[in-house]
Structure formats: structure tokens, C-alpha cells
Image (tube, rainbow, N blue to C red; front, side, top):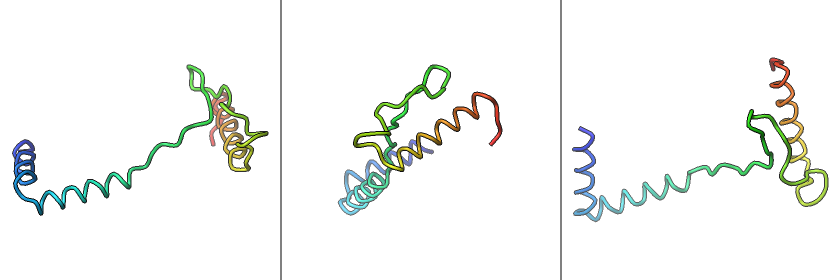
Length: 87
């Protein structure tokens, strides 16, 4: 059933310009909504424990309140996980 549906869509896309335009627009909208994962500033060891930060959040360009708060939250979560504390 799925193969038949895909084949029908493929034929319509190839032969019908209105269908092609609609599918292209739908794919463009879905691609624009795609959330890109944020690059993490933290490094973790093999066990998943926090081992450090890639760039300093104390001084320099990344010394923002948001980055410092995020680091403290990660440290807190790491300590809770390490000692088995329920949040």
C-alpha cells in the first residue's frame, strides 16, 4: 500500500506541474521549520559526566549571564546524577 502511494505521488509529481509546485512548497515549509540542534559548549566523559566547557564562560565573548546560568545548571544536574539525588 505504501509503495503504491509513493509510486502514485512520484507519477503525479513528474506529470502535473500544479502537484509539483504544491509538493515543493510543502517541502520548503517543512525544511524552514526544522530545528537545528544547538551546539553544546560542554564536554562529557565516557560515562556521560560533565568534564568541562569548550570555551570559558567566566571571561571573553561567552561570558554572558545565560551561558553562566546554563553551566551552573549542568554542574547541578551532574552532581545530582553522580550522587543519585532526585530532583
